[in-house]
Each structure stands twice: as structure tokens, then as C-alpha cells.
Image: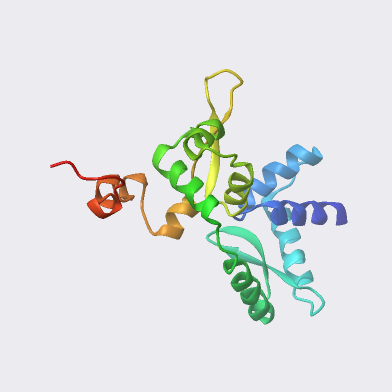
Length: 186
């Protein structure tokens, strides 16, 4: 029984966006090769909820939109808020912003294509953008070597408040006479 409870906790903990009762049941049956009814599963879930109500526990099991998630208890919200503020202070470098702009306007795009446009290596910038979840790997190119293709993510859209790539400013709207290099021919 303890093994089943620990497996349920592991499933919920590893689930990024929460997990349904049906998904937990399916995963348990496949992983442990057991049959478990919904009532038995609900009983295990109730035990987990009770266990995490203890003062010694930092996390609590919550049901949000019919999915189970472990969340930090409200008494730790100020600490977590400070963590988020600290993370938000870490700004993107100019190189990362340039790389992000190239990906946004040319997606899906390979690292080699980005480097050809920028003229320098962009390994670090791509890694930082992936860590911040502003870009994502969307597949592999059909070219030789099958390089990874990068595109902007849903997090990018949320961060910049746009619904899709079509909402990005058009280059013709950005480039003005003042931004051009050289003399204007008359």
C-alpha cells in the first residue's frame, strides 16, 4: 500500500500541469501491473491529502480543473514570490534578444541559420532562451545532419502579450528613414 501511495505521489509530482484521476489509474496499472478501482485510487489520494496537511510538509495536494497538483502551502507564498522576483530580474542579454528576434521572425529555424544571420555562435543564447522557455525545439530539419528546428513557445506569446507570430510588428513598421544606413537617393 505504501508503495502505491509513493508511486501516486511521484506521478503527481512529475506531472508539470497536473494529472487526472484517470491518468493516474492508467499509469499505475501499466507501471505496477496492478488492477485498481477508482474508489481504491480515491482512497489513496485522500491519504495523500491528509499526509500533506501536516505542519512538517511544505507541499499540499490540490485539485485544480479536475487535475491533481502539488503546490506550496500558502504560508510559503511570500518566499516563493521573492524567488520569482529574483528570477525576473535576470534579464536577457543583447545577444539573446537578437537571437530571439531572429527565431520569432524566421521560425522554424536551425541554429546554423541563426548563426549565419548573426555572424557569431549562438549556443549560449539558445540555451538561455530554452531555459526561460521562450523558445522550443519543434522538430528536425530535412537537411543533412537533421539539425534541430527552433520556434517561439507559448511562454513567448504570453510574455509579449501576443496571440501568434502574425501579431509581431512587421519589419516595414520598424524600419524608418532614421534607422537606415547610408544616404537616401533622390
